[in-house]
Length: 437
Image (cartoon, rainbow, N blue to C red; front, side, top):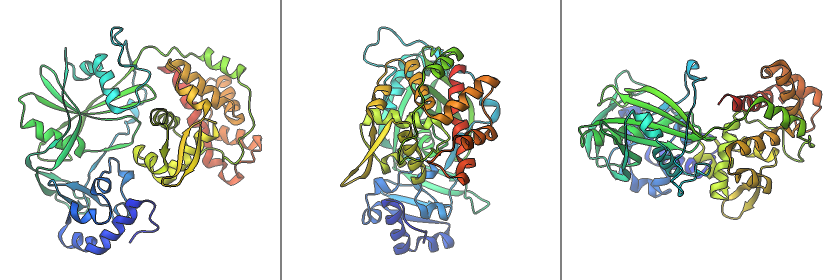
């Protein structure tokens, strides 16, 4: 049994593992098959089996290096499966260029500055010609989306505890395709996320790939797409062995943005000169949230949804509960998010008036500069940005620590300053990168 449950899924899976002696079965046979009916006795199977990212797995799965795969419409296999693929790019790709694409002026029903869902992001990418560029096709058409049945096929998946892959027989399990897009030579199955993520569930590409490879003579191209901070990132893959789940291989990665952002160093200098430094917020700790892109993702989702519970943020953004606390607290620190208690959902989060005003700005350039102003209104970040401009390069961790120590902050202890310094360097680097697009 794992330590304290942190969610309803954790609690329910703890009970199921104990009731069905799942660990014992896996030890003896390598896997355990569990029915949706059995899962439903504790909590709805739909909620208990959807883990798009490794960090979303229940505690007991993480503790014992387990994942779960559907094999029929009503059953699942639990085992030591290598189910996920990392999305972290290798170092040589980090400075990869971003292609600027104009949006068709004749289209009025898609607002490229207001893409608050995966479907809206896909339609924008399709209608702006981005998908054509990714697939290297003259024209493409959206032809498939939604839920469907896998049909029947077998595959092998790596077992992290055994030398040989485990063979899985799939028979009419359910799958869902965010979009299937057809060109003259290829058919792309696209899985999309409206946020930056560190990994993805290979099954979301593999099951549709196996289904459609048997239905079309065209090349079936698995594509993973993220849309974050107005940047479309496409990861184009191939499976080198159709029968091996883990034979997925990256072919290319391409990034795009709609229209020029036109942020230059002079804009940052003007923001520094114009920003009035405010006092540190009451009852909000100094932030521990290194990725400002993730804060932008959170603000974007809150703009679209209005209110999000702690659990919804945790599940959607591939956070663990501790990260959710860090990032919601960081957004509060900037005065962009607030929270209240809901009788049913517990803590829920929403944009403040300032946060809503910034995220409602129509021009991405204007919005990003407003976010820069919000960061620079905090003393430590303002000083770090000034040093960055003076020396012509982002402040180092050691410099950030010195700035924080000199600021004599009341909302952070001396012992935690070194850990929080990475947030300072992370946010300053985000500002610097705005000029490189």
